Amino acid sequence: MEVEVKLRLPNPESHQKLSDLLSPFLAETLVQENVFFDTPTTALAAAKSALRLRFYNLDSHSVLSLKSKPKLSQGISRVEEQEEPIDPSLARSFLTDPNGLLELENDSQIMQRVRGEFGVNELICLGGFKNVRGVYVWKGLKLELDETIYDFGISYEIECESKEPERDKKLIQDFLRENGIDFNYSDVNKFAVFLSGKLPT
Image 1 (cartoon, rainbow, N blue to C red):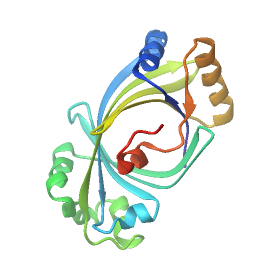
Image 2 (tube, one colour):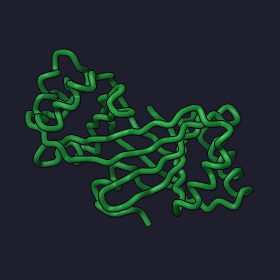
Image 3 (cartoon, rainbow, N blue to C red):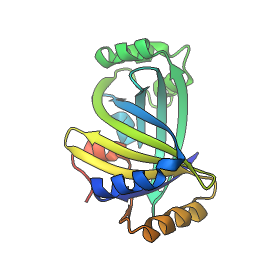
């Protein structure tokens, strides 16, 4: 189970101000490309699941993931997540041949689940979005400051994976308030935003 604090920033100015404040704590910057797959009848989405390929920093590495049963309330996200590394060049081939993913069944526990648990025998590529993520180590937390670039606009969010989400949410909220940075609780995840075709308001 992945548990994260997720707070949405309203505009690029808030994102830039927070980025400047956190700059002494920057650990790395990641450029991520996220691409999603489902059946022609969207069986995975109907089962509250998402099959994703994520490419990092111009294909330096890539990860196949299956996320299931997401719950997001009061800025705290809980989701079942399974991840596996995958060769970037092989992963790229699935953007034009989505059904090639199903041939990984013997080598991938994720694709075994997709085949067996969800009964999938055909996949299509849904497309996706890019994300520029600043990773900061701040007060013992790993903060992830995201600029997410969809075809229909750009959104901004700060995330923090946490074992004590209520405590860490308060710490982050207090920091934002002390520095005059507006925020809202994220009420939908990035995949849901992508599927909706519009930015959250």
